[in-house]
Image (cartoon, each protein chain N blue to C red):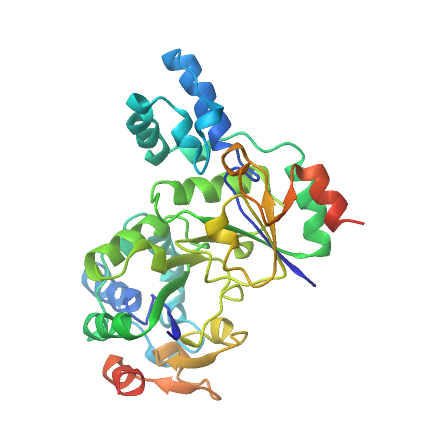
Length: 174
Length: 174
């Protein structure tokens, strides 16, 4: 069975969407999507970036995130045809670890804990395919990398792209 | 630089030692080292195994564990000569995740969060050497595996062994 390594944030979970919605609702502010090259945090006004980062690091934030559209249906099928691993580079955010595990158990109950890894670096893992939104994770990968399109990576070239989970199904579930 | 993947429990941290000490102190009981083949939990009297497992799964247990003798000195030197990753199969114990990260920051401050991975399975990681106390982790490894000797693996054959960190230094730091 071929192995697919799938990222969490901006790929199956939507921390950016959750943060923008909260920012609009609680602070009446808005973001500039044109300034997000490299990191969506940079789209928030500079004066509020520390506050946004603090929320990102706080317990519970990653526990209640929206699920990316169609990701549940497609991962359920992938899981029957591939060896699926969820790998999230989460060590920078110690409070996110348990939250991420519980979020996965809630929304992807067909995956078990053996299929989950929370790492500092993704240089450590190997497989046939990797779906991720960051060059830093894809660039050292020995298998076939796919850039999952997110607003912060629109300027990146040199990777085959997946724009949404319906597209992923067309590639991997023929 | 060659990559060494190092386990935590029974290799650089001592959950078994901590549990036995607590069991003797708080419950006046003792363990049978002759019954630990495969798992040290089996050395506790059967009537108390559920209680021991509950403590193992509770928040804080992995935060305050003894450090294996000489592991700090040897890992500090390994870290200058190899690409060191700490990989712990911890997903079965969600409460251990943050505890393990904080324990490492306390006792191995020369390692950074990029060098740490908490996984469900170790089939996912690759490197040149792996030091681990469990067959399940070593058996799929593509590099050179070393069995770190623990009371529960004394009956295992077929692996080169490391009995303590002074021996590891002799192998890796010539």
